[in-house]
Image (cartoon, rainbow over all chains, first blue to last red):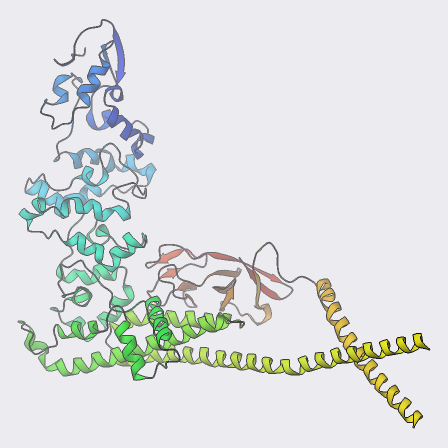
Length: 477
Length: 147
């Protein structure tokens, strides 16, 4: 039945039964570690066709293994041509056939139902940038299923070793999207993955290990991967940043269709294709750390002192200059833009509004930093500051909430939020003042206590002398 | 003169005795007090578990939420129609303090509009994990939360 290839010698007589993995060791091992190994009725034949077992002459399996282990690009020809796998054998699918081959099961509702898996991946893939290039432009260099999921070693997406695990997605996409030879013909940037790695999202995912952070597929889709349109960027960001989007839609910028939305302010140059998304608001932790360093250098500094404010601004990360430079990208007389005439009259108003908003934000940041730092420092002593620590957490919440509110560019709304934060700071300081005063009072209260102890000890000493004197007198008498 | 001298010595001795008596009484009381405190009923659980009283049940109205600190961590305690429920008040997204939404009767984070149900499970928004739950008990009119 089986006709070994020309390179396989017929030295030993007799027949033995072998399975695919007896020759294809590497593929067999990879398959045994994949998620597919536990699926009933799924084996090599599901994708490649062929027979379950083959009858071969005894003793030639080792030679067959050597043939099977040759790399495809070894120049020694296709393994399939050297060994007759039977009439049902379909061989290695072409790149164009791979999505359809995977879709045989993964687009089958009945087959996927027990696993609770979606069955629209193939349909989604056809709508993706990859799928359209593959099926409409016959471009076989685009990504197909196996490029992202692997071939024989397909793993669950939540397996940390899977190429489609959240933490591995940037590298997986980067294998093609950082390759100039692949991206060149489509005129796509090869910097996007590097930009993402530097972004607030990339650092959160790759450096801090927060798998809740968005990666490439979160914004672009996975099977239906396609870049969001210019007008859709805000909606994509708004899927997670709901508060920011809600406030932005209430801002004067929302009604201008040419406004570059989120990326206009959150990328270094407002380029809609830039993936280096940066935060403009400083995190509460950074604010506290900045203020603590300031206190170490200038102990006793006050937050209403202009020198303190200037020193805080100089140390703040991200730098406060962002507030100015971002606004001036559009609101500057020297900006050349086809749409310039629409908003040139608002430059002065925008500059003043921007300065006011920043003053409010800085005031809130310093207020938060001073109060929480004081709670921390007082708490290192003997006083219990549980209630004040809870208030400090409330302040932190208010401070984090300021970031979305800023998107409305509404001074009144922001002022109200900052006043609420300041009221909490006032509560913290008042409560700590009371406790510190009480502690001082207790220190003073020690004075009469120690005086009583001194009197008691003196009395004991006098009594001792009296008794000693009486005993001596009695002995001599 | 001798009588006066003896009277003076007697008065001084009496004064010293009184001072010693008072001092001894205070010292004895300070030693007995811990023994009495030991006999007093225990109000906190042992084995490293924090159990803290968070308020009188009588003053707690239905669907009222309170933020308390248990073992140094902010906890949100809510009185529902099925009893009390307590969960970490720290949002698992960016660490803001969550609040009860009395209208929808679920928990909301004011920073990024995340929502949680009263079992702490994420029902909307960006948080990656649910809010950890705490045990709540009502004993003799007092509400206790333990880790």
